[in-house]
Amino acid sequence: MVSIVHSSAPFGLRGLEVEIECDLNQGLPGITIVGLGAKAIDEAKERVKSALLNSGLQLPRKRITINLSPADFPKDGASYDLPIAIAVLAASQQIEAKLENMAFVGELALDGRIKSVPGIIIHAQVAKARGFKQLILPSVNARQARLIDGLELIPADNLKQIYRHLTGTEPLTALKAMDRLQMPANADGNLAINLSDVSGQELAKRALEIAAAGHHNLLMTGPPGTGKTMLAQALIGIMPPLNRPEVIEVTNIYSLARLNPGEVLTGRPFRSPHHTASQISLIGGGKDALPGEISLAHKGVLFMDELPEYPRTVTEVLRQPLEDKRVDIARASRRVRYPADFMLVATQNPCPCGYYGDNVKTCICTAYQITQYQKRISGPLMDRIDLVVEVDRLSSERVLANDTQAETSQIVQARVAAARSRQVKRNRGRTNSQLTTRELKDLPALSPAARQLLISAIDKLDLSPRAAMRSLKVARTIADLEGSAGINQSHIGEALQFRLREQALV
Image (cartoon, rainbow, N blue to C red; front, side, top):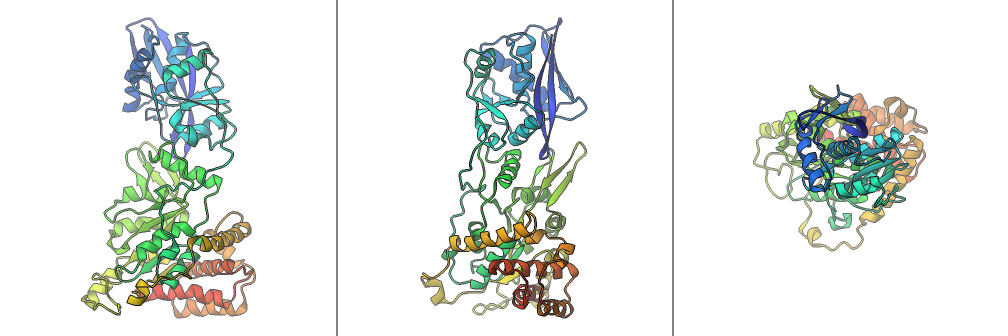
């Protein structure tokens, strides 16, 4: 007898329906798995065998052939354990339930427990798209799967529970999609730094507000210990919360990367890779073509502390994702695409010793050393950074002052959220940083004085077309923060102020 059980296979952030066919024949008892499975799938026969026996179920003493269809698609991972076990039970007539409207996913322990699997949201999306009514899955994955509506979820802790459910002796409780999300749960731990905790640095705080409002890339430069890292960590607190589609995307990426299993991530990610990180760890890839840091920072912040200390070969791979907001990973066996819509926030010292231009400590670097250090960041990468701000040393009185008038992150976040709302409504769901050149040129109410100032800046500062358009995007964000329908001269002037600081670095 042949039985068919339905499951799915993640393929990047997409998925493919997989049919598990089981055939019992006379012959030497054993399990054979075909269908282009990797080592983890070949080992599934031992896990399935032990899980069945230790759950008090029968393993047919026949030749068992398992086919994973489509057979020409490479498959990997332990998520097929549970559907294989169900297929064996159905083929041996230990269960007689109709399985046409059900999908199964889960890894089996030797004692029959059902363990979590990566990419559960993809499995749920495939089950829904293929018209299945129910998805039977590990209990630990149920919370993430409940982000997908229109699908009945049956969570289970062990194989015996599923057997009893399918035979009708002890039906399991079905779950439906979450009505509302619980906020917040940050992808990388709660970064409890309030903007009011940072003494002074009003210009840097203004740059953070503009960056958060328009999703702009930011570089902070200054001597060591002036608060650059603290400012970057406070950025998460002023960004608007994720909406439901963004929560699904972020949670999906982290699930696929085997991070934060079972958790729904409603806070914006903050990723801070070490300067020894490789290209693969940054953009993703490896044997399993998993997401890298730029995808884990999707809809959040990629923080690169001391950007010149990263190898040039590593920083240069950021150029295309910063423009395209995605990354394509090609390997011999697969080609996947991951989203990478992140804000790049970087810091750097002005020179190797860190004190060039400092008003307290004297720089000991030569002019050649300073030039070579600053050239570690290429011109094309700098062209993709919208805002550059100096974070100078504070006076001793200002360091110890208790500034009770400093704005909190909550106050700034309200302005940022209002500005985002304006631009998302105007730009059909996108932030200002995502506008195309044609859309920028069609922006309404760019005053004649503002236009003339931008033209003059392009000539005098030798701005590239990309840099000019990015300055216009920043000006549009500044106007949104003020609630202005048009872009006037002061908006262009403030946007260019951050470009002037960039020119001083190169």
